[in-house]
Length: 332
Image (cartoon, rainbow, N blue to C red; front, side, top):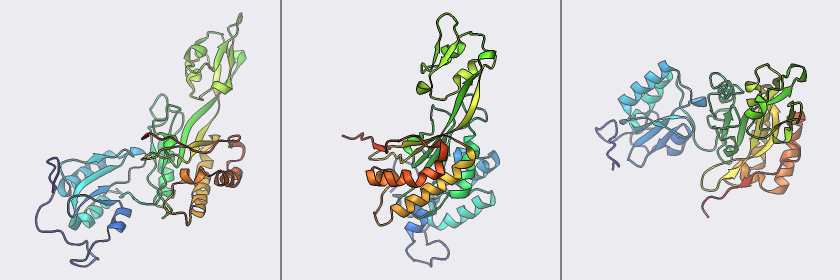
């Protein structure tokens, strides 16, 4: 049955199993889903999910994706909430052809199930005026190193936001990295114009009576860099730039807000932290059924073990005495 008037891309006789599974054999739907080919409610039709780290797709590859979708899919492609391009209504018998033709253009298929998923990312600092960190580079590097790892107890998702606006929702991922910059004020260069205080929406810069010189309140700072961009004489500069790191978040039926475990983590330390967290999750979730990292970390004993084990990896960038991930119930 086809719903909403969206016809599949191919007609003809009933689809056979993909090559290698034997004519008439029941397909291994679990394996197909793990390989990014998700069974639809329509008989013998699949949605093919593509690997698009950070949501970025080169134009030549995009044109080839459109050709493949037109040949084997339905009347459109779908952009998923995690920045993947999905080709729906692909016939079971065409899955190998789709995979092969996409591979010729350098386009990989994504993964589903209890594995490391494709990282999402905003545009970062390449052209976004708010961007502080290179989210696209990090998403590509992390995808190349960790994509498809598993299987684990459940899925494992990561995201990269380039500034505190946090478009990539780092608090809703198993590991989230949000760009930040710590400002430094050079009194000798300051002309006491007050533009920095006017630019700061957090009240983290106060002007002294009489001198109009700024006073920095680090406890109120979101590390957004607005003061640095506003200063006409470069009296405000970047002291250090890095990542605010959050762990244990998820959305879905029962969301969990991730906990911040590090501040200003350098690029060079990101992969080491991811490796440590994934390894900890794999070990400590074993035998506990389908459980996400955030649900596991809500147990006080597990949270203490996690911080003790991850602490040496975080080093000087570890957040002091962080609270565990917390549930954020939206249904009741």
